[in-house]
Length: 488
Image 1 (tube, helix red, strand yellow):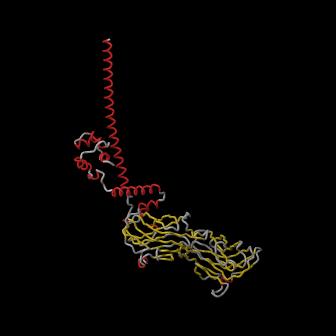
Image 2 (cartoon, rainbow, N blue to C red):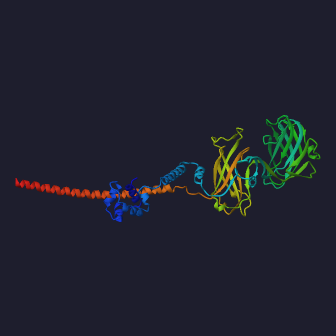
Image 3 (cartoon, rainbow, N blue to C red):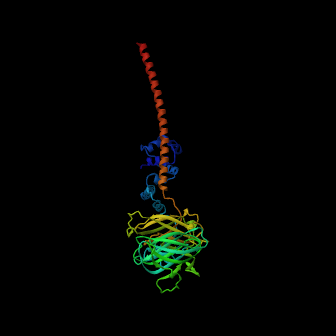
């Protein structure tokens, strides 16, 4: 770029016309036009004045600025354009956040690849088996016994039986149920075990309804492909509601012809003997005295089940939650696919998992669903960055005292955590160079348009003057012809 082109660029950037620049330098507009067209160069004594007018150095005006500075400026603009292009074309919100938050300030950072053993102890695993903590924290989910709910489920159990099954069969029960029940009709379930299938389960079950109150006979038809072989146990569940008392004084097995196969009633009045077989006992109930048979009152029972809910907990925090906008997790996950019997670790498999982040704040010392943020992510064997936006939770404020990370709920799942970071906010992507470049181009175009409009107006004036001259010449020519004709 020569000095004339540089003056033209600086003049347009400043929003000046050639006439304004000429007036400030006390020269003619034609001189400025010659500089910019490269026909002539400004006098040396004007260089400092031109540089002062545009706020640049004489070296920059003469094109002597550092090549390195120009190179850095171009690299900055290229980098800004690349970041903008990545954000505009990226469909994944999480990936977009990764670009935006790459240089975000860190409020707190926990790097498991660099932590000492003592620092790692602050992160307590629950429902986890730590497989390796030499680099990333490598964990595997383990089953946890957890209370699901409390239920009223009294059971009368007869076990140690040895009755040859003559399918189909009928179980006859004579019973009475009294208490506070919301219904007039109750359900009675009977479960059974056999030598071939010794476990209680819902597949080996039959049911019947019976009325509340007076004594009644309940006839339950036992017929199933699993009801075969040798009967070893019966479990009678008279109801699942209320707090009533049930008395049973007769239990017998009949074949389909109405013939007695086994009378189990003596078990109801036999004294409990842990070594005797067969035997009778109650579960989720309290046995009460009765003149006949066996009587029992239901008691609430805690129903538990095994769940896979791995948790990584840190209760030793004191961080201003208001400063934390995002939680950044660097981790990878392997899921166990029960249908395939293998781990789904390929990043080519679209295996969506849900993660939950629970938190405690000062004055609220429990992890609850009200203080929880969930996020879905792709479970792959590739280390990935996950960003959780804390602004979606109205409870994220005050002093953060604890974090509980629930990465996945899946039997046999394992995961590796390399880093947990609390980020301050969403910094603007550095597009200042790109934006200023656009603004410069717009300003230059506007000035160029103004110049062209001025030149067009001058051209129009010149054209009008030329037309006037042509008209004058035509008039002179016409007068000359008339004179010549008069002379002839």
